[in-house]
Image (cartoon, rainbow, N blue to C red; front, side, top):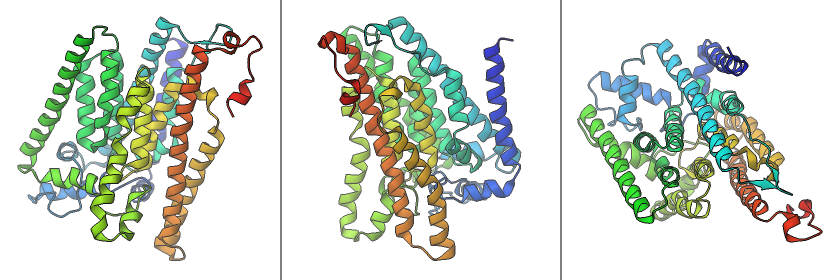
Length: 426
């Protein structure tokens, strides 16, 4: 067996063993599953269990106002939820599958970069190679956010898996599987629908004829809508009702469940008078989706980076964010490792994430259990977390554009004496 195969087996084996070892402590899984940073009203395993219980007993699962997850996800858990072992294996294997897909995406990206070989740095010297696929997979599998989301059994993992599958298939050029995967992700959590744009860019970037590209985009759009409609129809067949539309997607858009989370919505709407709620709700939701088109136009040459950036936008501005969203965009970030050396605020970003990750559960405990704090404490640390995400978006976008600028205009080609690279980055 080749050394790379040995290393791959070691990494995935260690990730598997770590998750199974942590799952061996039931109290840990239950504690993490109750943390608002990990489980939200639309991703909670506890609420999934309640929905399955109602469904098994002939009660419509969406009648109680507590269950807000997709019917086909309910169908997935229906036969296995009574077996804790099968549930643990499902979550563990889902994480490993995501890690494997990230590894494959890195390989496809490396092959595309080797074929083009156009990016040069200062004096026509080749750019250093990016992270290997195994490194990318390792960073995802051993990311603390990934691990706690898995052990806490947040259902966001299935949406993340569909997103990564869509990106993988998009890079492979498989239109049907790519768009179906994004349709599944959109069906599960709505916001990934905006990722159809970068995935379509991947699928059409090799087409030179403008008319042929337009026809392909129309066919891809039709297939995406047909896939989504099929999922809705299957959901109706399973539940014999359309109530899930309001309970799942209505809750996501209207943010009707104001359970505290890491997001910006809940505190704002708790304090707001009801007559102002519709206006600000529209503003907040538009703010999530409005970036998709301009980002895709400006950065159309970098569809993989667009996927990362839009995933970060979703994680920062959606109504019910969790650390599971961070595990997705932080898993996609190493795919763009060539921009790391151009980033200016890496230290600040890392510290903001660490600071908020440690203090969020402490402030929640002080507020809810001890009573020595209040909602302002927890919301403030959520703002710190959001600031970290926003600075990450700004800094990575700057880094990409800076890299593109330097590739097109190296200093020795512009000025005989060049310029101070450190000054240009400040």
